[in-house]
Length: 23
Image (cartoon, rainbow, N blue to C red; front, side, top):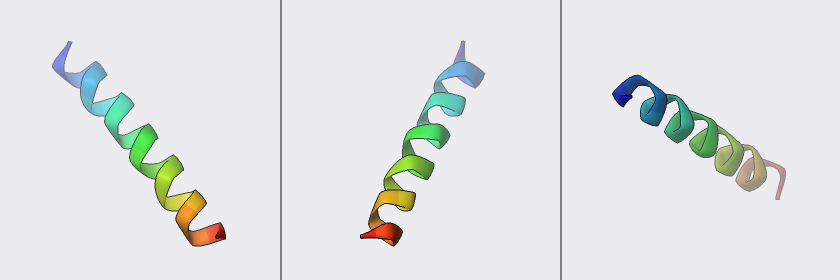
């Protein structure tokens, strides 16, 4: 359960970082 939350957090953080880097 905790690992799943961490995985989702990493995916969201990666997506946000990608958007910020692109913009």
